[in-house]
Image (cartoon, rainbow, N blue to C red; front, side):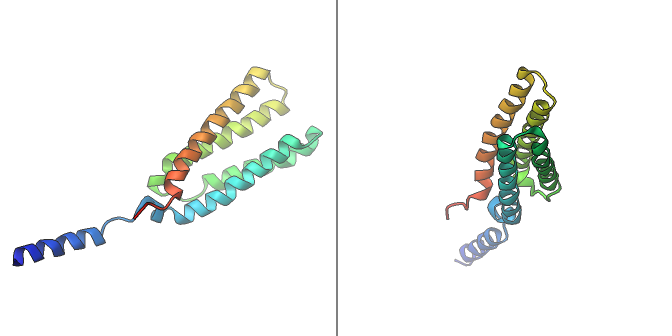
Length: 136
């Protein structure tokens, strides 16, 4: 009987001392990324809707600044894959607009935006894994 109680106590200690979930580790990171990614998307939409191109440059600059802010965040190890995909999305999105502004060929422009789209959806999937509280 004493051994059973002792083993139960050990199991209780191990469970209570376990590492926090990725959700718990990433709360601050998730909040920052939600805000910054929303700002980036807003700037991208404003860029796409602005005319003439000279007005677009401020939105493009905003996008680059936001990307740099995201890149400078402290990233929990468990969120690194999502973070890398977000940075790739932002890079391809800004490359797409840069290639558009420099009047690069359609294939280059389309390739950048297709890659941006692919990384965006992949990021959303990964991000939802860390931003969703696990079931108890």
